[in-house]
Image 1 (spheres, one colour):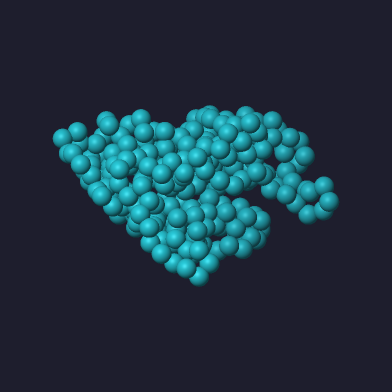
Image 2: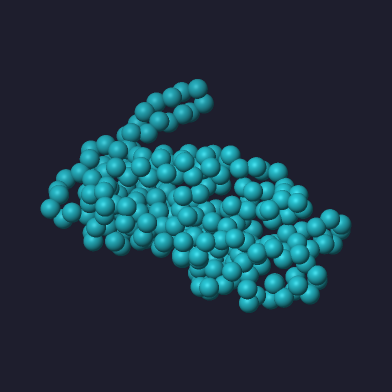
Length: 265
């Protein structure tokens, strides 16, 4: 059901117009409905760390002609600068800040983004769900997503670039899986030029490699948070935060009386 909800939300996203709105549109001028939806329902770090502060899109003349748009929020120097330059400030019709923590978990930035997320959720999620039951699994999944959102938000509390995706919540599932079933093996397709084969990779190795691939870039983001938060890209710190939550909380959610585990994932 989580996979279906994610796919349904993504389908809604991509069916929205991708062209810029005109001045007679009820939406923000110069911004596509797809982009506006991302800004409204994504998790903006500034809103998460400054509850009650709303954000807007400021349209100002660019230095070399045309216009440029930027997300500005209440109480920030960027908003005051935009107003001083005579910018057109159009408020975002966003839900409450706490609601965006949840809405952002079911949005994605592209087909590959959602495809890889749903693949990992499909492979590892069912075994983790079996260890705790449906209700606990949904709670575990959502809490991992919350931990991931704040791990990224605390990297730069003044950032206004929204984060979207189920990656943080799924990272929590992966962390839980690693502790529950460290001896499980993952049947993996390996493609070497024209040669295709299936091999069994221990889950501890696969997930360990995955974590290292998230942790190393996250250290780079920690070194330059202002660049990482404003430049877009992958929210590695959210992945690390979700994974750490999964490791820390899985024993609180898993049924201690169920023993053993899957031989394959």
